[in-house]
Length: 544
Image (tube, rainbow, N blue to C red; front, side, top):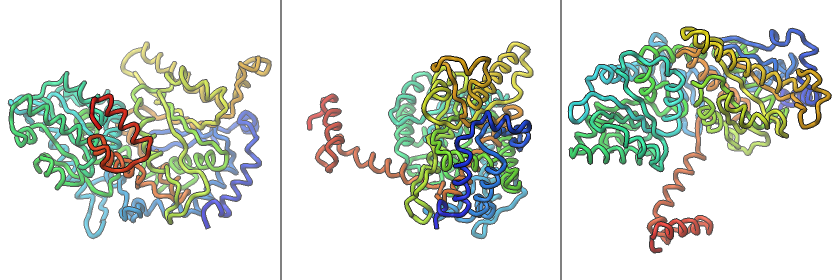
């Protein structure tokens, strides 16, 4: 029996029929304490669910579904190192990456906590070496620029964290500039190299397999740039200007990175869950080792809440289950993430990968085709910018969209009244938009008499997440919360959130097509692809 045939699912379907046509303004009118009844606090964060189309009965039935799917046991399985990634036959232990050194975790007879902290300490030693000016380029220059070359989680996670924690740069980093390159077409790298001094530039090549074609293409270009500038050997350039972060030491060594310049992590670390590992070296370089440790501590605080809090008071569980309610019972399949803090500009893109790569699946853990929806289409933008872009659709379009509004309560405390006033303006806009989306033009004077093109129907569900202040701790907790939300939803949908075979297939097909650009008859393909390759060759002056 699949989950959609279960008693708890049927009860939610029946409840949705009763509630589907009830407007949020009615729910607020019926319950003067709605905020108190539907908000939860944990690990630096308050989550207000009162603008979701739920009642106490809804929550109880969602918890019934979670218990039916054995969610508490599945949470323990995640933390305990069970093979929750069955298609790759391994655990998913990103939570262990932020576990204190004093909390042992034995996996296959070894305490992986010791291994994790040994890797972390090795990373910290390299960070200090660079900060102290002891890592030198080929002509003896101290490093002034660090370029992180990665793609997916090896890029999005560190990039997002560095931008979010920009005010927490370490005094020890000597104003080292951190840059990020991910695009396989070379556009990012070509523009960047024109502005850098080769002798004082260090490249971090971040790749779990050390065979990702996007990453290696950029790394090869960077290496040739250094060799051309220095007229030195590949071996010397690799020693002075490259650090490799990988789970495949042999491949990194084969590419040319000496073992002393390598940092390792584990096969059970998924790419989109990897910024807590040595992949986060760019974060530590930017913020300092102490702030990186604080980010890990904040994530661990959310881990502990998720693992131990009752389901009815568990922030990631409630966030996930209300998402299930919207997707599977209210037929809402679009999700907007709207931060009201410019430092979180990369959070929507990060969550796009985290959620859609994890839960964009259409078969169960048993390989059966699903009869119900899984991950919605997720997108987002900084709220003030989005207000002048796609909020028109949210307010007056034909699509139902669930939204997450995210903002810090405190900002600019040390900068004076003017910037604090700007922050208050951002908060006022955040709360006004969620209010109008929920209650429609009932919040406006004479709103019900406005012409039809000025009417706001409301009833768009949203969650408002207010963190106390954007710090390494609160940022770590926020990201961990979304990771756990993804896992909870995967448990309900009975899918594997830790593999990404669709991504792997795309890489394979792209590699197989490379030969056809130089040998168009090398293999047969569909007429569209063949025709497009012919057109490209004609434009490039290549004879077929």
